[in-house]
Image (cartoon, rainbow, N blue to C red; front, side):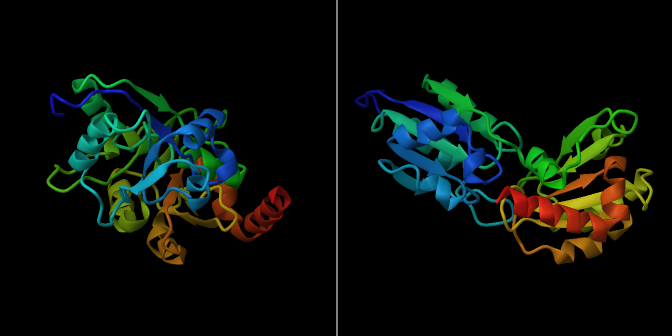
Amino acid sequence: MRGDEKLKGKVYIVGAGSGALDLLTVRALRLIEECDVVFYDALVNPEILECAKKAKLVSVGKRCGYASTTQRFINKTLVSAVARYAKVVRLKGGDPMMFGRAQEEIDALRAADIPFEVVPGISAAFAASADLGVSLSKRGVSRSVVFVTPRVGDGEPENDWIPPASVGGTIAVYMASKQAGSIQDALLRSGYKGSTPAVFVERASFADRRIVPTTLAGIKEAVKQLGGGPAILLIGDVYADVAGESSAFLAAQSKLILARQ
């Protein structure tokens, strides 16, 4: 930042949640409505952006597996934005603190002595669990939940995500659809049974969500049923009813989804 630039603003790192507009937190909605500029990720629901009626909207295009604005450029943009805008919103999909690279932005703001606040959002694993009507944890079945992603950035070393996932319980695999084969192979090699229940949930919390029950042995085929939207893979014995009785389960969930709309 140049010496003649005067700091006047504050940055709000806001979670847009899993996507549905009515799942935004009250604080997130208020900030979006009041802010001067929004730097938003590619997966943010356009209906949410429509709430920023007085703000300048700037896409920074962050999405796994697609061409994106570099993180370093985003960091510099946030630092410089406070010299022009009083209230800056950095809008991220899901929860900023869950695989959202928020820490890099926080570190850049701290280094520049810029005030900031983080506003949580509903992460995909929780929205998907709500869509399924199946808890991530269940007494006597799963007393632990592990959130992992095998995804690594360009130039980064391979991510050894198997040890934390091997403790049993429920595994929520983020950014899983493009790496279904390697996820399956890694878990089978680590000792998981092919019959372990699993389920993909694509576009969790949206009316057009897609639920694909399967097993660990079947995820390479199951992923072909997805439509290209953001998807999370949930694995564990809590999904036995989902994988074992998929037709009946999906019929029941369709009625539940229609009732919510």
